[in-house]
Length: 165
Image (cartoon, rainbow, N blue to C red; front, side):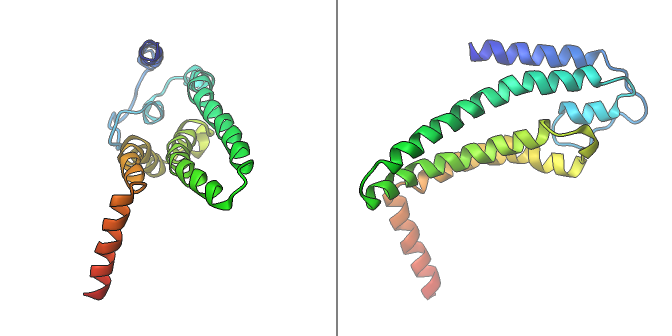
């Protein structure tokens, strides 16, 4: 089902982008061919494209984000019911790494696609797209690996050796 939604999403944006006319230099100074830089090259009216990004994107991005957010609200209420401070700290420690990855991923996507086109900046968009396409997936295993006690012990030993050297 998710694959069908992804394909439908891609077809919709491809069809809308292919109807645009382009004028001038057709070079995108970006590391991927994203929609917003293409819109900047277009000399056509991009109102429909922007409206589709906002409405369809609200469903595709905001839906999962709101589901995850509401799950975390429930988790926080469950954590607050735990009587021992040590138990609360352990549970929150487990959830915080996932929350950090989710916030990092959705934060950059929201920045990229849910802001006025007048605030577009090629440099900021390149940085944001690197963050959500490369850094977030790369940080995900790293953050979860740090939760492993063996990795934590090995890191402490390594830092102790480095600081005494």
